[in-house]
Amino acid sequence: MAPPQACGLGTPQRRLLQAAADGDLQLFKRAARALDAGKGCLREAVEAVKRRGAGSLHLAAGRGRMVVCAYLVEEVLVDINAADDSGDTPLAYAVHEGSVDVVQYLLDHNANPDSPNGKGSTPLHYAAAGGNCEIVKALLSKGANVDSNGDTGTPLHNAAFFKRDGAMKILLDHHADCNKIFNTVCTPLFTALTAGSMECVKLLIKAGADVKGVGTVTPLIIAANNGFN
Image (cartoon, rainbow, N blue to C red):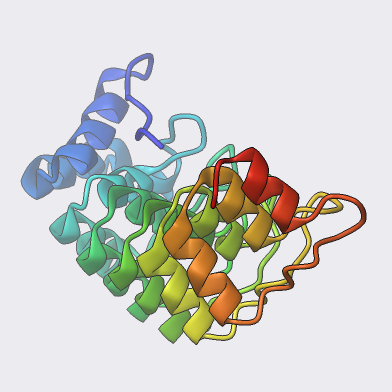
């Protein structure tokens, strides 16, 4: 997820979003004051500036700009769970960036770890796909649903698809359902076999994954078709 660019907006608005993305707090404050124009409604002025639904906190979080994030959350009091046009929150942007510190900060300030985007993917789906174990742990420690369903299945399916055995182990240690079926027949084991990840396959079988499969499509057939011996 690349943070949206500020092009196409008026100059003060563009400066505000660019400053957030660059982590330039002083420039951000000047741009915010200019937009507020002395009305005393700084939060409203800042939150009104968006690009494809993404505001200043999205951009700051998406670039790992902790100082700007802290200012927006603690002083401007922007909505920490605001969604962009795709349904992604600042927390999702921070997860994509891989910024453990910003993810933890947002979680500690009541960011919703289970907020889904328009396709049902949560920050944990993104963290599992990215294989960032520290972020996976942080989300789970704040109560993220380990078996949340999205358009790609559960976070465990994502870990299997992207061959993220480290993230998979953490999810399984938190009792992720290793037999959850997605798209009629697709279990995490099927996904791991299709992706060709032997490490993920071993982890899933050890956790109790069903090796019999669903219907006529079995893990053994998938394994044979993908060259597993």
